[in-house]
Length: 311
Ligand SMILES: NC(=O)c1ccc[n+]([C@@H]2O[C@H](COP(=O)([O-])OP(=O)(O)OC[C@H]3O[C@@H](n4cnc5c(N)ncnc54)[C@H](O)[C@@H]3O)[C@@H](O)[C@H]2O)c1
Image (cartoon, rainbow, N blue to C red; front, side, top):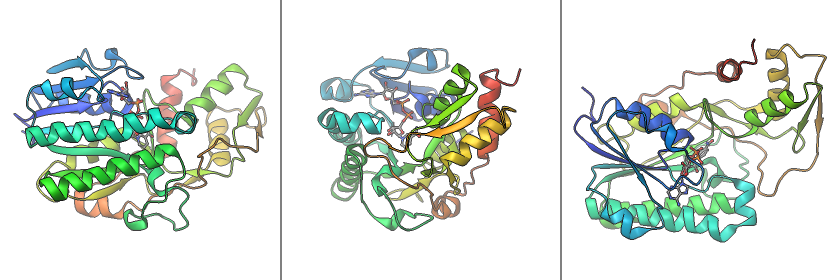
């Protein structure tokens, strides 16, 4: 028995990386789970084998279709345009999906009087100057993606205050694990193509807080238990940071390529890239009784194993 037994749950972006891990966990504890995803980056194969899942191919920008879905008790809103450089090249598309799309999902929550958990991002902090960065640092977005997430959060606040909806905002650091995208995959791909050279985009001095997707999923589910997380915002990271150049060295070490792979840097990063992500996770630990369990080294070992790079 879990607190979600018998609840009708609706996951936007459920066919994506984090969403599909969440649905896998949820499908074991709820009998009414709807995945709503336009498959722009997600894959139906990620969820179609799961028990108790009803898949709907739909766009969060299609308000009519969203509103016509069966009444739900709980919404996890993860659908988004997630690529920072893309948001800088296509700010209107990014805004539409992340800001207006979130507003549409909030309208569905309002219609159903459903509880909602919103997937936000470290990008709302921009380039913080206080470390580890806590939830009350404030909004200083540095990319269009960060700004569209701020708008999403602000609408959540508004719907919470004005319509009395039960909403929790979760800000993710850099989430990793099976099926993820981002810098670690990029490094593995590059080394696979040419083990003699690993090029880092940027200076390599940017640093990131890597958290495993299983720990994020645990926190998302815990946030829907009882009343404690209603109206609150939480950072979800591992609570440690590592420079990208040190991440590259660690990967090379774990692949037994030390002395064989030369690291180079482009020196120039992409527009909207930030220097340091390092989360203070004290609030989630205390209030949600949550502790991330999987270290970066474990994440890397899991990914090396999955890609059969250890054979
Ligand atoms: N992965 C991370 O490190 C990270 C960090 C911070 C925040 N987040 C947030 O977590 C959430 C999930 O990210 P992810 O890494 O799983 O990304 P993802 O791209 O794998 O998943 C996003 C999903 O949303 C779907 N989608 C996109 N636009 C849609 C639309 N208009 N209508 C319906 N579905 C749509 C995609 O098809 C995909 O399945 C996003 O909101 C993202 O901003 C992720």
